[in-house]
Structure formats: structure tokens, C-alpha cells
Length: 139
Image 1 (cartoon, one colour):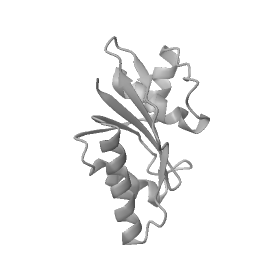
Image 2 (cartoon, rainbow, N blue to C red; image 1 turned 180 degrees about the vertical axis):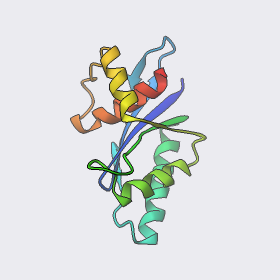
Image 3 (cartoon, rainbow, N blue to C red; image 1 turned 90 degrees about the vertical axis):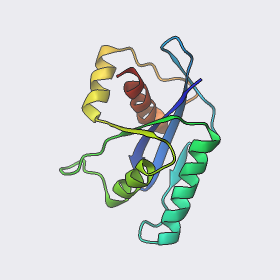
């Protein structure tokens, strides 16, 4: 069973939802120990190395084969902060081969066309990560 990970980068945190492909074009939420990992100090090299180590351990422990990251705006009112750009680069450089960025527009379009009920086992802050994973997997 392949496992995919949806990620939303927010502030100094990477928020995760891991899904297992059940084989019939549907997914089940995989219970994981960590639901988010923080980049404590983006200007400190040791903190960046620790974030990268934690991210890779998370992907390895949960047997993630594909990652979908919710794309952040590069400019404008809702532009991503410097920390989110660093986290994105670290994740793209992770040990997982497939790392794909999903636009907010693609996620909104998926939501409009599909009944995207949120699984009850997710925390509210994980909803965008879940939608990112499902949108990427169904594309």
C-alpha cells in the first residue's frame, strides 16, 4: 500500500497528513505520532539540520512514497514567509523521490467538484494538508 503525505507550511511549522491508498481510488488516514514539525530558528544552522533530520525520519518511519506540498504565494497579501521557503526547500531535498507542489487554485477546484468530507480523526489544523494530499493524488 503506497502512502502519500500532504503538507501545509504555515509560519514555522510543517503540518502533515499521511494517507494510505486503499487500492480502490480511495484513501484512509494513517495514524502518525507527529502531526507537525517546527523549524525552531531558521537562522541557526543546527536548527535547520535538526528540522531536516526530523523530516526525513518522519517520512522514513511512515513509509511515505510521495509528498504533496500546498504551494505558497510568493508575493502579495498571503505571501509565504522566509521560513516556509526554507522548509519547502528542505522537504524538496528530502529522501522521498516524488515531491510535488499543489496550487491553492487546484485544491479549491477539487473541493468544488468533490464532496471532501474531513475524516473525523484529523485535527482542524490538518485539513489543508489533507486536501493537498487528496487533490494531488486524484490529479
